Image (cartoon, rainbow, N blue to C red):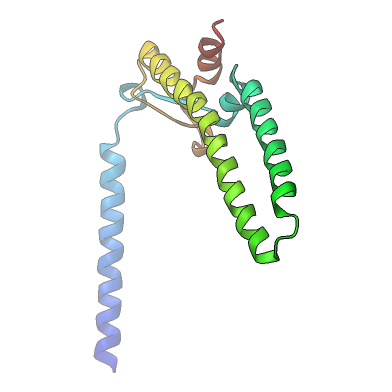
Length: 149
């Protein structure tokens, strides 16, 4: 029993040395920030403030109302099981409409982010909520370009 305990201690020590060695190597070879400029962007802020979001939300609200009325009409006299199936079907229809409305907004944000990053010479852009510190915030620049300002 004792030789196995000795073996485990030796393996744990070996693994700790390897992890420490790899960690120090990573720190020593990390590229300086100025050689790898990073932009950050608050994506949800851009979606919420996109020039087309108000119209998309209005269209989605209209679709929700139509689906609600359709459910009320079709579900009259249905069993609970049939009502659940209809609810799922109409829910999928609503989700499809939401995606139809959201995808062009997301695509335009992505294209604009790419353009702003290129203008500023940024090597990458990451989501702001994923960054603890650092990076150049380009959210306002992207929104201004989206808005045509």
